[in-house]
Image (cartoon, rainbow, N blue to C red):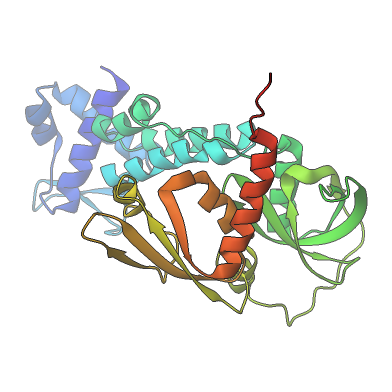
Amino acid sequence: MSKRQQGERVHWFHGRIKAGKFPNTGHLAEEFEISRRTAHRDIEFLRERHNAPLKFDRPHNGFRYSEESYEIPGHWISETNVLALSLAVRLASTIPDPALKDDLCRLINRVTSMTGNDDRNTCLQQVDRKISVKNIEYAMVNTATFRQTVESLFKDRALRITYHSPHNHGTSARTIQPLHLMHYMGSWHLIAWCAARNDLRDFALARIREIAQADEKIAVPASLPDIKEYTRKHFGIMQGDTTIRVVLQFSPQISPWIKEQSWHPEQKTDTAPDGALRLEFPVADFRELVGIVLSHGAQIQIIEPPELIDLVQKEIDKMAKIYCRTDTP
């Protein structure tokens, strides 16, 4: 008899005990149409392999647990739990460390193997065929860099890194204390206390050229700002304390897609009779927004503010010089 079938019988027997039904060898044999000898082996398996505190209750002619809180390892896992774990496996595709992803898969397989329920395990077995995640325009991170960063983050250890700056094409040696790791728009960012700058800094993992555990300890001020507040101010179109209102208008052709998107927690929308969509929200920095506006081409128009219009116009002028056609005789 297969282990899966035995697992089903053991979990059925366990369920009857938890329901106060006092099952016995005969009940198990009758339910699954097996011999009493096989049923007895199943009960002993439950006792010995799962350390079940089985006790035969003679007045009820059946088994009960001497410890009512006992549960078979894995029995508490529901199909929804397994589905969530299966989704976690697919979403782990953003992790640039194959070993960590393999560890996650092994852990989930180990957990689900204890359920004794083939239906629940089906979710994990089918996840490759049923669900996929495609990442584009993401920053590639060295596997060793990612692993060292995560380990130092959770073990509260300082790091020595060599960091590359795309602005001046130079590198600098830093000693940092990792505080928070964030995945933002395809790029992994480490928020850390920098000893050289004596301040919080954002380090893109893709720009770390060398990394090692630091021998020295770094004293981090107790008065650091809240990390969530820091990321709110320094990432995305919401960054900063002072904001300015932006109003964008989308053509009727792409408005249905824009309506499905969330650009800002405080955004407001209004649809015109012709189907055009007006989107309004506050921002503190235009740099990221300029690229977003340009990506929609002629399907978007900036209504406010004038400063954003000027920035986009200047960028369009630069592009025109690159792509301008010249008539040749």
